[in-house]
Image (cartoon, rainbow over all chains, first blue to last red; front, side, top):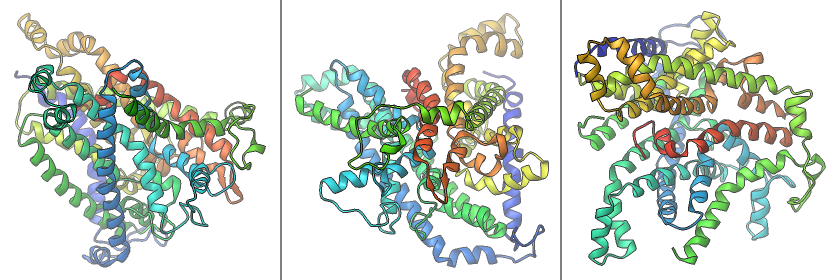
Length: 291
Length: 269
């Protein structure tokens, strides 16, 4: 159809363009300036690429990249496989299955920050409240003296458990929807050919799900890459820098230390990295189809 | 379905529901039982924490209200901007259509933290820090893209013949949009807005930098129960549980659309 598409898109586009342009231009400009808001209300001088060079050589940035990747790749993959398993279990037909399917919606409704709060007191190393250390002690597993979230070795694991709880149902529900939309004729044909239920799952249903999984994976990957709320609620990036993701480092530099120049440069590094990752991924998945 | 897989499913479900049960039981637990080991599973429930936080003195009632005001206003503003755009994306083919769609999507996926420092300074300069208006504006960063994507998936399902007939009858685009499309996609619009509301409700990062005083959202105010002398877990649990309820009710009522909502309309479900 032909129509006034420009006029229809213009208001939302221009609103967001202006809203986004400010941060982008702002960050680009100040990424070449030295500016600590705590010591001065004005930028304190042009420093060229110094902010970028500081970041690239900063061990804290390297540490944050590693922690961000740990949360974004292996943890998302674990959730994908757990979700796949749960979806396969939920894809059965028996009385009461609807209740199970509804129950798995619950974690996806919980705000990430609230998920963080809930797990913070489930991990809490104190009498009564900290159910997880208690249960671990009952089955004979010791927990660190300073608590799971208070120990360098286990804090990231605590964050990962929180995210796995929050996001596995997301995979389970979306994959379940995909499984249930596989055309019945395909399943009947496979049954006539004598395929076992595992074979049907692996060779008939799974290939149909490829694109759906590609979409939900990238959404989840991004949400893990951006992880901030759970960390704010549970560990504040600590102990030390054991749970400082890129997002949290940026928050720390900009809004705690007020290093505006440095955080502006970090903003650009993160934005460019993501732009490359997401573009390659979408090119690969959609191959120029109409979305 | 064999017996073993039902047992496995039951076990996994209990594991995933347990944290919700645990926060709820803490919110109705008499405080003297907090420090009992092994944890008290059976006790006489009390409403005192709910009364303290939301009734008398009820200092979190104002935070609940501001969460509601901010999320509702942001959702409505987003809808007004998004409805024409999602119609255009659904119906028309034009140059850069896909690129524009992905541009909107990329705003939804960008780490919101990258916007926070500039927004903080922008809103301070405009005098909008600590106001509802300031928060509603910055929420549009994700609310408009989300609404556009969701709403488009619903408009896609409306047969195009309806508008073609109206065009032949000489209707202009305003009439088509407001008199024909809007009533037909009203249920879809309601679902889209409900999901946008949940995303606004669950946002933490923008209130962290911009909300002050009575504009503080419930999530943000919950952190005030962590003090130097310790955390008042019962109140934290109470606020957390109340915080979960609106999204939870919306998701359970709209469970038919849950997959579409969670994937921004990319998967129809």
